[in-house]
Amino acid sequence: MSSELDADIEAVVVTADQIRTKITELAREVDRDYADREPLLVGVLKGAVMFMSDLARELQRPSTMEFMAVSSYGSATTSSGVVRILKDLDRDISGEHVLIVEDIIDSGLTLSWLLKNLRSRNPATIEIISLLRKPDAVKVDVQVRYVGFEIPNEFVVGYGLDYAERYRDLPYIGRLRASVYTG
Ligand code: PRP
Image (cartoon, rainbow, N blue to C red; front, side, top):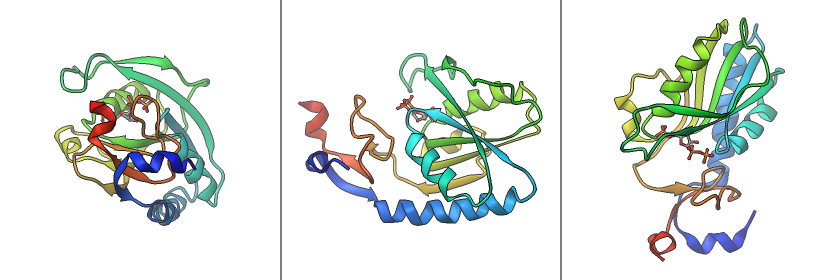
């Protein structure tokens, strides 16, 4: 918790309490859906770190964890959806019940690529859970099984989401003051 960052936040978009409540709800759904299977949570670094750790602790049944780090070529607007793997999974996922854990789906390009990539490794099942989703995500045909909050198309930080690598440690999600990035 870094209260000194609060001054840079123009408005709170999702409070820490709302995040907690939603994660409990999502975890109950995942528990129900995976009652007879052990999910392998695949967290997409770095944004998903907070969500992944809170979700895993809220699940009532065991799960295992893997992480991937990816980076899109070019800016989001010019991206062809081609993604570079910065850190790959440490193990084979064939036959596993993979649940991709994301913090946010914006253009949807990262997930669309990741889904294809992970599917080619022959998991038994593969689903997506994302804490946040922005409106543009509907343009890409990616089935997202669990979504926490639909949020407007504005620049948000906190709870894993960064601006220039900062603000990930905020316990809530907020809109950054324009003065922070215009100087
Ligand atoms: C963010 C986020 C998603 C992706 C979503 O990651 O965590 O992975 O962008 O955007 P898209 O739907 O437009 O593809 P980012 O590349 O900023 O890396 P980070 O998680 O390390 O901050």
